[in-house]
Image (cartoon, rainbow, N blue to C red; front, side, top):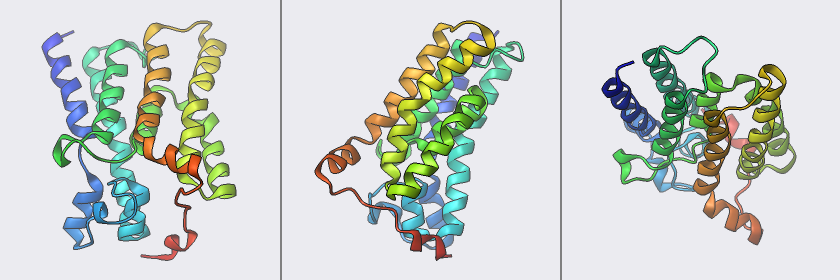
Length: 215
């Protein structure tokens, strides 16, 4: 294992996570800057408001991939066994990708909420836990039309789902897994601080299903 290469790859995870796909897609297609609309974020939900469903789908795909690909790269460089997805290095890469998504070096340390990028890291690190909590995310949004509420509840449930599934399948928990399960959702909650305030005040923006009709 080449430590310097792993450190570079971890930094690369942050830089990859920092890529503001919402802003890039807007500029490449002549659309409005998503930072000037709605929440002012660059993630998929605000891209949907600013750019319509097709371009928002591209943004969301990019945000997912910038979580998955760094984890895959660091996992390969670490030369871990096929089951060792929660090694220290893969977890660090996953967390740094989410930090990049929420605090992008390319846009003044702002960005999105980290949900799609966190989803991308979980595809590689903990797909079973992700599959367990994803329906909850969709149900909450469907019933309340509050994307932030769905994101917060799902993030909170991810850790117990991850720990239960890991214990049931492997018979134990390691430190890297615990760190991923606790720190990852905490980063998402931090990025939702303003949403939490609006939810408490009853002023949070609801999801307009009409946006799904816009190309």
